[in-house]
Length: 401
Length: 225
Image 1 (cartoon, each protein chain N blue to C red):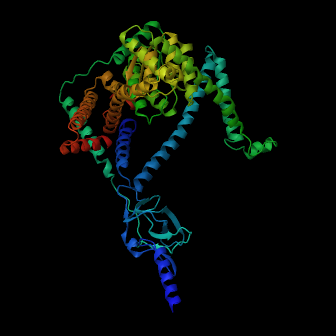
Image 2: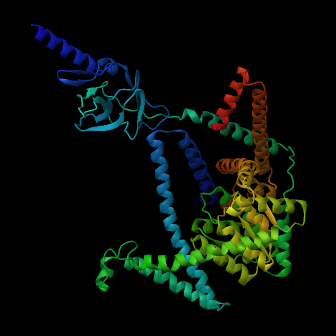
């Protein structure tokens, strides 16, 4: 009897010692997951997504155990279980991606001990499916900004339409365009216009073609030859149309030569080499390099510089600006490229949008300055003013958006 | 007038607004619309290359006909254009075609195609040659701009000197803290200036896009008004 009691106590003791100090249990049928853990699991749809994500989370606290938990996913009407994630501690938050909003999913969880024994897979909840959303709420500020910006543009355009006079600062690079075209006419040499190396989907290319219009008009008036080599066939087609219309507007459609606006190659350095060749052979008196450029910018600008042509360059590519500044006579920097169309044509409606750009820039400068001063005050006061921290948080949210 | 003016303006406005909205809508339908637009763009771009070929042929045929200076090079351009196209059509782009393998029985399916051959052993070396010219152009441009003729140029010269030295092992050898100074120059004054330009550029891009969508900017359609 004593042996039996001793044996019973030993079994009981070994059972207690081997019993995990949490809800994960091992009974005579093997490893089993505690229903209390299962109850803590929640599955919810991820907000602001395209209906491809679900968030599976459990707030239960469980750490330092030698158990491995596996989360499985099964599509409804399917028998295969796929492992979503393996983890060994709680709380846990898993985002399951790559799902379809047209399907329903079941999630299962199992526990594996250090010996590799896996419990049966327990269903977390019933079938769930992700929902596609109709609006990205994290982009609300951006949308508001676009609406405000558009409203400012529309307001200023209307003001100009009613006769309001707007001041536009002098842009030397654009003021020199007339002089540069005049110089080419006097020298009897052509004007070379490079509309950048990018495609029509680049706004800088559109801005460049907007400048090409007034430039071509001026060239047509002076009866000078205009050469426009292109890297993209769509840009070439648009450039032809722009030049042709400008020549017609200037009353000189007879001077227009379709072969002067041509396609060269879509190879980046091939294009640079060909443009450099044109600069050397044709020796244009004026080179206009306006649009989007990459590494080929300096090759073209330096080739033009060696021919002694007057060079006006403009790009919004910050990395190429130093090259143009060193090799060209005038450089249209960044936003000036977008202002050029309004500046050259002096069309009141376009000038209105130019002013809107300035006002919005002013608004951004105010925000940055405000942020800087509040940050400074907060730093000086040791961050004890909660009100300031809240404003900083709000400004950070706006900047992030 | 409708086809040349109003229709393009309508297309720009409708698709411009639709693509802005698409950015804010995460629904799969919106994604599909965007992908469809990209497919359309690829299809249209493919067709425009025909215009590119037509332009190249017309330009060089005119040069040959008129015997303008250097017209012989135009023959080389046209021959290269047609030979490359023929190699691609009959020889295959990434894998030799069956026709090519029949003409040349020694060619295996794993062999480099003649088109790829022209790309790898002719076009690539030529591109690299032009790219390598950049180093010499950089040197000549730097020489011109670093001449200390004014206060700005002197400042540029000093800064460029520090940055150049700090980027090579010799700089660290002269003064251990030089790479940190360079890092500071690039991270703060340089980055501040770049961001200032970038903010202006982004506003310019948005303004130009809005102008096109609203039909205020029409010069890209040809003509001013």
